[in-house]
Image (cartoon, rainbow, N blue to C red; front, side, top):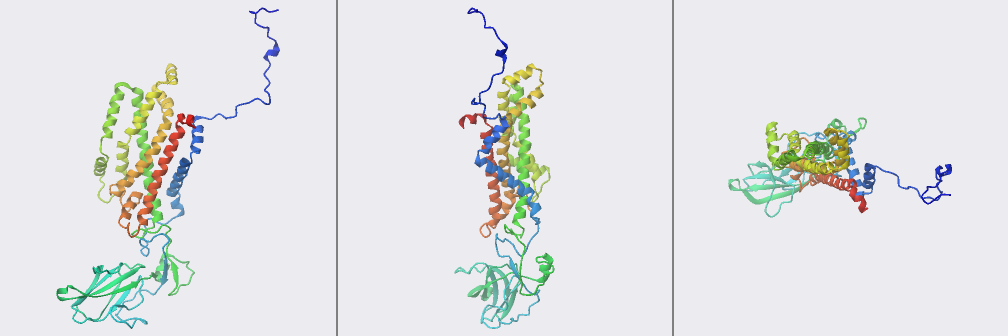
Amino acid sequence: MTTPNTPPALTPDDFLPLQVRPDAHGITRPSRSYWQDAWARLRRNRRAMLSLWIIIALLSFALLGPLLWTVDPARQDIDQISQAPGADRSATIVAPYVAWNGTATAGFEGGSGLRLAAAANSQVVRLLWDAVPSAQGFRLYRNVFPVDGDMAFGLPIAEFPDGGAGFYEDRLDLRPDSYFYSLVALGDGRALSNRFEVLEVDVTRVITIDEVRARALVPPERALAEGDEVLLGLHPLGTDYLGRDMLSRLMAGARVSLFIGIVAPVLYVLLGVLYGSTAGFLGGRVDQWMMRFADFVVALPFLLFMILFQVVFGIGPGESGILPMLLALVVLAWPATARLVRGQILQIRQEAYISASRLLGAPNWYLVLRHMIPNTLGVILVTLTFAVPSAIFTEAFLSFIGMGVAPPTASWGSMSNEGLATMLTHPHELIFPALFISVTVLAFNLLGDGLRDALDARMRSLE
């Protein structure tokens, strides 16, 4: 018999393990680490994942693309200058050029006034005209636009001192297009009169057999004859104003732009992490002096230092200033990262596990490298993700104004600068590099937003 104050007697049966009932509820959610949980939340963000795949595609385009598309970005295709994507690239085989004596070929003997003496092609345009009474001479113009009432004849290509019958053959930079030739009679003092004739000429693309063989446009065993058609080199995204392949130049430009856009942020973010963590850990007056120096660096003008670094490295006009650009970004862009990391370190140094590590004898470098910096990786990754598009845009801007990557080295910024001159007539030369810059900057920004949400533990309470 036991009293109320006497504990019950224990038997061996009381120490047997409990039997789990079949219908008992267990732990259904597996345990996940911080990074596994962040990756799971990032995968649920469709915009961030799409941006991640776009970035992977851009890196593959820059690194693996040249292995698949082996066209030299510096090689010129003079027969296809400023060709838009999908433009006709067929050419008719003709005989090599021979000198002309001013006689019309068969089928072109008749007619009067300004007329063709033979079929016009990209090799030569041959013109004939009759004498004009009382004319003191002629001046021949060429234009790619119709002559309007203001008599905008275009480019003067030849002048003849008398008003007799004459002939002329034009071989100046002919392309498959419509040209308007104007023959204007000259009056007293060789002034333009109101007597002129305009002839519209459609130029077709031609090529010789020797050129076809030299460029390997057809298999060696294929027989060729005059009148056959061949296809010139393929340029999926067209060519620029010098006949260079746009696709290969975009790949070369991607390597330069992404190299600057990734290497520079990694360097100055790393510098900012080391500087900010040191200032936050030491604290006190050292922290105040270090942060005042960071404020001083923020006030320094970037363009001025860019110019100074170009002078120091001896970068002259027309030379690429990639190294001065990298140095200017690393020297001047780290304070923002240093401020963020310093704020995180000041918060983390008050945590209990830091005090426990101190009591266990952990040295300062161990506390910083093992506990503090790893706990700020979320902020560092987000900062790096947002720094990459900023660096890419900075490179594009400097190359656009001629202070960054200079031709013939390709970058998206320098290509945009080159395409600006032909924006109205050949917009693809500006659209493609500008599109790549925009897509890259947008993708990194959206990925940065997704990483910020995924790495912020406080966002879990909002899901």
